[in-house]
Every structure is written in C-alpha cells, then in structure tokens.
Length: 606
Ligand code: AGP
Image (tube, rainbow, N blue to C red; front, top):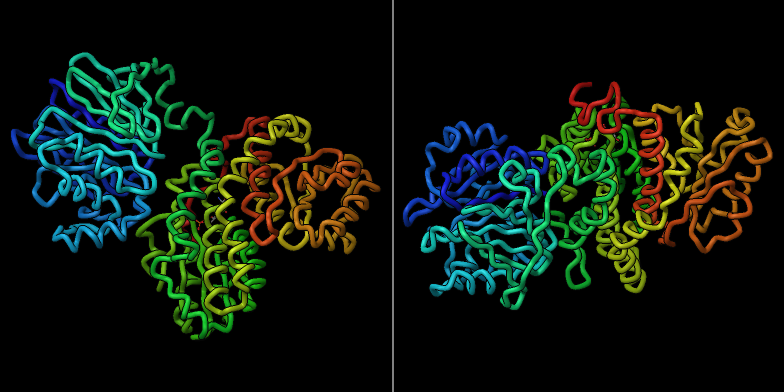
C-alpha cells in the first residue's frame, strides 16, 4: 500500500504535495518523491526514507516551483526501497511522470514487450511499465494515451499522471485501489485518502473502479472506462484526520482485520497465473535436494509456521519441524545442506529470528524468507524472499501479516508438491481453486458474524480462557490465544484438545470459558467429545465450526460459523473470528488496542 497525491491550481504545488504526503505516511514510508511541472519540463525529486528527507531535499518545496504536481510515499512491493525505485517514474522522453498505488500483476510481460520496443527501464518496480505505455500510446492526445495504457494493465492501480505538453492537466485512474478527488476553488486535488486533502478542502469526489478523471485548476471531468464523461456527486468529508488514517475504524487493528480480503488477494493473485503457481525467485527444483524443512519464527509468525506445517507435510511428504527462533538459536540445531529453512517474519527485523537464521545458514541450510517489509534485514539475508503484499501493518498485534504468511506457505506447499509429484494433478487443481477462493471466504467470515461484539460483552470479564483444538484446529488455537492475551490482557491458554485429560482439565471450573475450534472434519468428532468433557465440569463453550455441522449447536453454549474450507487451507479463514473476538473483548476492557502495554511492533533486541 502506498500513498499518492496531486495538485493543480494557482499555488506552488510542492508544499501542498509534501503536506499531503505527511498525512499519508502511515500507508507507506520507505521512500518518497514528487514531480512538478516547470515550464515545459517535469522536475522530479526522490528520496529513500521518510517524507522529512524529501522536505529537506526540496527545502520544503522551495527548490521545485510550479503549480501542477504529483507526489508519492512508498511501501515497497516490487524492488527494494531506493531512490531509483521511488516514485514518480518518468517516461524515456521525459514528457510524462506517474505515481501509483497498487500492484500491476502483468508487469513482467509488459516490461518484456516495452523493452523489445526499445523502452529503457530505470527501476525494478512494476509501476514503471505504466509511464512507458503512456509514452508509447501518446500521439498528442493525453486522455487517449492514458485510456489505452490503462486498458493494458491487470491488477490494482490508483494512478496520477502529468504531461509536460499540458502543464496544468493531471489525469488520474482508479482500479481496485482507493482514489479520491478534492474539489477546490481555482484548484483541485487527488489523493489515496481524505487525510491528504482535508486541510485544503472537504468537498470530495469518490472515484469507482474503472473510472478516470481529468483535473485542471478550474475543472474536474470524470469518465467511465469507455471514455464517456459521467457526472459524479460531490460529498462532504466529515471525518477528522485521525479517524481518516484508520479508514474510519476506531483502531488500526480493526482496519487491518478488515483489509485481509484485499491483502489476501494482493498476495495470491500475482502468483497464480494460467493455473500455475509462480513464486518469484523460488525454483521448485531445489526441493529434490531437501530432506527436511525447518520453519523458524517468533510469536504469531511461529504460529503461522505451526499451521503451515500440516499443509506442507501433507502435500510434500517431507518432515517439517517448527522451532521458536529464540530456542533454535541456542539449540545446536541438526541442520545441513539438505535442510530448507523457512523464516517467517512480518517486520523482517526480529532479533531472535535473524540470529536463528544466521546460525542455520552457517550450518549449510538454504534459506527461504517470507516477510512483509521489502528490503528488511531478513529479506536481505535470505537466499530467496517471498513477500507478503499485505501493506504496512501499524497495529502491534499482527492480523493481515499472519494470514498472508499462511497464504505464501500454502502457495509454497502446493508448488513444491507439484515439483515433487507428491500431489495428483486433480488434487493440485482442486487445492489451487480452493486457494483462489480464500479472499472471498475471508470476506464472508467478516460479514457473517455480526454477533461477535455481543459475545465479547459476555466473556470480557473472565480472568482466563482456554482455546482448544486438534491438528490444524490446534494450530489456530495457538494464534487465537495469543491475540486474546496480547490485546485484552486476559490469560488465555491454547491446548491440544486431546491433552486436556492429562492434567489441564483440572483447571476447568464452573463458568470457565473454553473456545473450541472444530473446523477440521477429520478430528471434529473427537473435539466435540472434549466439549462434552469440559461442559460436564461446568465450562462455558464457544465453538467455531462450519455451518454444516449442526450437531455441535446442541453441545456448545455459543457458536461462530465459518465457511467450509479444506483443512489444509482453513487456518487463514478460521483465525478471523478469533481476531475479531480478541479485538472486541479488548475494546470492552478499554485496552490500548493498537499499542498494548509492554509490547513493540518489532522486537529488534534479544
Ligand atoms: C504478533 O501479534 C505479536 N505482536 C508478535 O508475536 C510478533 O508476531 C512477533 O514479535 C514476530 O514479529 P515478526 O513477524 O515481525 O518477526
């Protein structure tokens, strides 16, 4: 996720752009840039790091005079955070500049086509193909060039484009990434969200997917995908800036929970092409020399590994060991050149994980990293890095970071199994289709459980909770308990349901809340027996199950239903209601949800 802004009017554009970018830094902050039209040229300034660096470089915009411009603050997805990869990107003839938020899924073939036609690429980004397409289609008509270029793009894009031949016109395009127009008097704006413009205008036009617009100082014209002009209502922005940064949600955590369908699609879609899985930089052929897979991480990332283990072992028939990085680094691990180490980390900067990774590399392991932050330490140290394109995760408690890590593990497992021929073609296609359905199923869960806040009111005062399950359900119980602990401060313990009788059931007293995860059909009957056991000792049971399982309704005190998903892929859907439950319990308890006490977003010390 990145932030884009634009201005055209009578003021100098740069100071307006810089102020807008500061408000969008929460969307991405590893590099930034702006482009301003000066006479018949476009002046571009770009930096790595925060907006403050761009303010310094442009002396708060004084060094880049001009009344029309576009700006960008980046969250890298394709290409590390560098000046060259920062936006805006310029056409070879210098006539155009573009800023982009989203992911161009077909950029590889477009880049190949444009290179063959003689266009030169400066950056590693997917975005750069856009500006060369505009140049290629330009025959003096800016609007036509933008339309033709946009029609070649697949994926998600909110674009701002300027042309030195037309110094006071900006074209913007919206497809699956937010884009809002700000209506001023003698000046007009665009931005990724309202926070960047409320200081100048509260009159907004919200573009829909497939629409594009032309901005001049005195007019805004909106067009549909065929180029036909359409009329759009002007809305009044009532949000305050802080609310707008959270997309109108009370907390970043809730915003990020609700973003998971989009994040899941962003992580999956570019990697499933024509029925095949394409994992950039990962050659499945290396699997033939792999005798063991070792997964290491911390916290929720470790629990993602615990869930991914079931899928990888079932499909690849290779032993998978999941180890806490803080333990592995001192465990004199049995690792050699036949070990594939998979490192999971949202931040890519967790000290224990880095240390464990270095220790395993030293012993000969090949390292595959799955991280969210492009260019992070773990990403740089790994032999191969697969990014989770979840966008910046602000809340300390990870949600979309965890679910997108799971999705990359699923992609890896299926890709490796196909290479190892440990999965039949029919099963491969069935699971691939099931994988593609996950973003929609995550959305269904978000939509189908309006009763979770009420459940939170029922359970929020309990001193402790048990999360129980078996097999893949147990892996989800691990993460569900951590979510509850770290934001509501309620002691929550995850337990393999089959283990209760070996001691823990002694703790079950009258009214003890037990969250029972019952989504894996192969073991659900056994877990239902555990529900009977704990109920017999007075427990209050909240069960998470498939809607088809009506038997469980008679056993549990409360129910949360999720769509039926193959157990090998279910964790990414099953965790959603537990994220929401933890959020609403913490809210009932008045906790500081985005910044829980004693916790940091990235634990960069041992
Ligand atoms: C997640 O909710 C926690 N905040 C924490 O356990 C986190 O998952 C852990 O610190 C690992 O962080 P990383 O994914 O950035 O390496």
